[in-house]
Image (cartoon, rainbow, N blue to C red):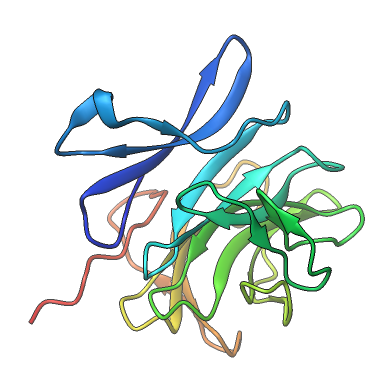
Length: 198
């Protein structure tokens, strides 16, 4: 589950009768406020809100393998970037043979970070919400679980350097030139960047 920017609701994936869809729940009202946003036969997971809370990016295998889609938070159809068609969810990744997952909207709203799987290896990449400007930022054996810094310019992630190696934490900036190890006492996974403290 992921919090909305105002902290009042969460987006999450739920599987019912073998079908996994995206839901949003108002935390103040609990289960009575649960709204189902997707109704596709594919597996829809990993929702992440845009900074203004109006859109959600998620992973779905409704196409050919896991890809990234965006939709309105209220579930209403939107005009898809590129095609201009009105759809309930718009696909934004199209690389043939690649699998996309772990999408996370940046705090500035200008990028979406993700994990991309190609030829058996995992890397961290970014794409603009309209599906343009995709860039792969890392070149490790298994890089996963991106998390944005509060300024939206650095991504923390976990890296397994080789088969059998333990996972470590790293960071990379949007230039892809500054990949740094984040020291931890032992192996570590799934980093989450805390908010800026005033």
